[in-house]
Image 1: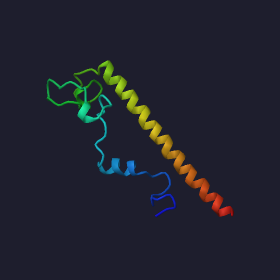
Image 2: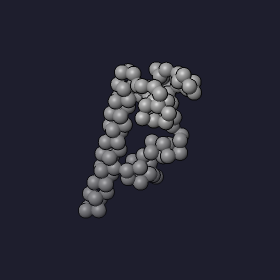
Image 3: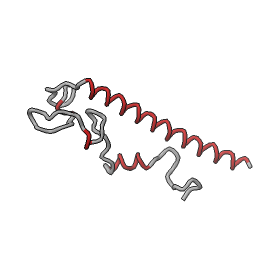
Image 4: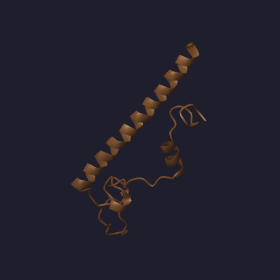
Length: 104
């Protein structure tokens, strides 16, 4: 275990591992909300809710995103980018502290 309480290599987070193995369901890709709070309409063809394949530009694309869905998608992208920045800052901090120890 590392000095910060984890043993993952710099730049690797538990979130990355969860995403790779499908351990974290995460928010709806169509509206950006938690699946329990999804605002997506039911598809008239496949009767699924929150399926990207039902929207224009994806799969059979017969539906269009609503304004609320586009806002949710933007918020989700911003949230993911902020997480990525935090991950990079933590990795950089880890590397810089390791460099300081080598110089001591």
